[in-house]
Each structure stands twice: as structure tokens, then as C-alpha cells.
Length: 111
Length: 115
Image (cartoon, rainbow over all chains, first blue to last red; front, side, top):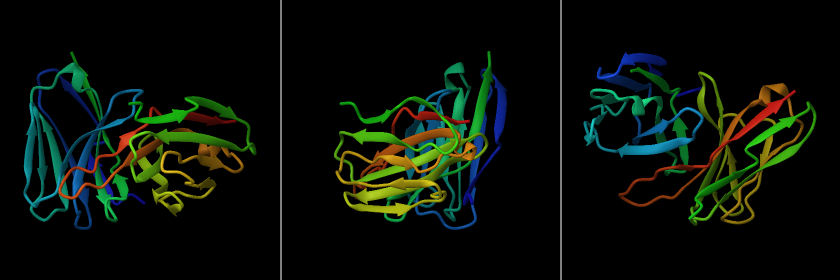
């Protein structure tokens, strides 16, 4: 089964509100990747984190990798309707050959 | 640059029929994978390949076969379609760059319905 769990499964927010999705693993992750999938589309790579405690920012998106490398979060500040979609975390394991995805968080932004 | 190309985009099969989903990439990536996406289940790995002639099973391999005769192509075969294989299928390719990102590039997906 899935090794990487994400919460929440669904989230509705008013436009302008913040949003956070969390990714949790029972085992230590070698890295964490985040992808975004727009409705009807395919997953698109956002970022990769490798180091313990690493934090990276992309405009309104902030990505964190936990100190123990067992969890990660994606935070969106002041959501916009263009943020709608499903956000997946993933681990590129096995020498980066196998990308294992979390269950995803579906974000709906209400204008 | 086409990236990852999947065909067909949509397919309806009858139970017991066989078919092949095509996937081709023009980025010279070593690694290619097949995923299926079902509501609430995320993307689950079916099979993957680390290079021509080398394939391995993922999380949900039963009912599917793959082969990798060239770097570019990685077809997925459904041997005898079952309603449980109704899903959206994604092919992805990636490469390993030491110290760099190892992002997976996805095709547009194939929406398969088995009746």
C-alpha cells in the first residue's frame, strides 16, 4: 500500500486564504518532490527537497522538509483561483528510479 | 520537443479484450514508468524501466505487461481487460542528475474504460 500519506484529502478555501497540505511517511525519505495536477491534466513537477529541514520558496508557495525527513509540507499564501488542482508529494527512491506518490490533496478555491 | 507522448487519449474496451497503451519520449531519459490514477488513491506505480531491456514491477503490476526494446518507447499491455482496470493511465520519464533535480515528466494520460 501507500507509504506516503497526505492530509487533508480535500480542502476548500476562499480566494485569498492560505492553504497547507502535509505529507507524512512512516519511514525516512531520501527526498521529497511536489507535483501539481490541474483538473483533467497531468502531474507537473514543482520542486524537490533533499536536505533535512530544507525550506524552499516559489513565489507564494513554501515547501518544507522535516528535520527527521519523515514529513513535508506545502504552504500557499493568499490562494488564487489558478491554484486549483491536486497537489501530490512523492519520493524518488531506489536510486531515483522509482517515484512513489502520496495520495494527494485536492484544493478548491472559491472566488 | 514533444516530451512524453501517450496514445490513445481515450479507449473503451470490453472485458477480456487486450490492448497496448503506447508511450514515447524524445528526451533520451533512462527511466520510464507507468502509473494508474484512481479517485482517492493517488498515482500508483504499475511497472518501471531503468533502461532498454530492463523492467521491473511496481506496486500494482498484476494484469499488465511491459517491455523496453528502445530508450524511447515503453508500451503497456493489458492482457485481458477487467472492469477493475478502468482508470487513467500516465506514462512518465525521468533521468538522474547527480546533485540536481530528478523530476518525472508525464504524458497527457489515457482514460481507459472497461465494460
